[in-house]
Image 1 (cartoon, rainbow, N blue to C red):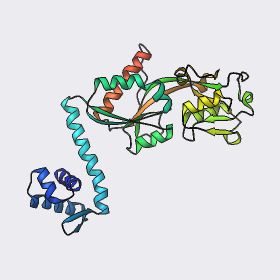
Image 2 (image 1 turned 180 degrees about the horizontal axis):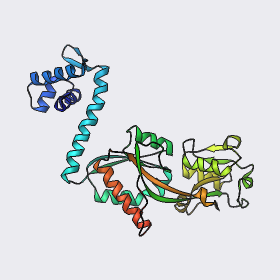
Image 3 (image 1 turned 30 degrees about the vertical axis):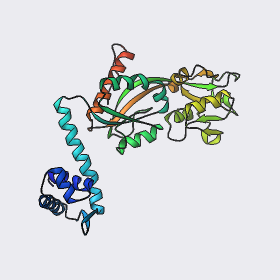
Length: 297
């Protein structure tokens, strides 16, 4: 399979036909047609359904297009990376809502200052949803709550978080799971790593046997806790961003409260924008822990 043929194939798809693709590529239409025929011969199946003067992608063509786009993008990234030029293009980044609110503003502001040619697209989600998004190439990298289970994903520990239980101001002290008997547990939906920590803290008790309110916003969670709707386990840094929140903090044993937020990306697929983010995150690690660096995997 010829790389140049893939470039011609991609142009034909994007331009919607041979003639316009030929104009874009500065080739004669017969040359473009020959290239497509050579590619179809190489893969052993038609890539287009031909309807008079129009071309429609066949199922095999749709499948090949995804691979062609990735190969061409990797080629462009490789050329750009080795040239030493500043990163540019798109960076699709995922992050937990808590990390987005409490840790990322300064980091992303510095990233934008250093690499203004990179267009940043940020999405938030639960730990498990973000791991899946990176693995499926829907985002390039993500800040999550625990090291990823997939060996295809590399990670760099970045932010240290401390989890605390929060309750309404008048709640009695909470030192064990027995102290929240009868309380509603407020948490993010399934797939949240902090929800799993809460499950471990409960021990013999179970979320399945408790009253649980699923919410997808920390502002909503904190507001409901303050109103006396229940208790929640959240990063203390999130509460620090809400000085107006009328909640009581209850410490949790270190085994459950100490969390390190890693940056994850697909192993062996570091684009220039992701590499720049990784290096900037590494600088954040050094600043937070002078003389020490968290180990990259």
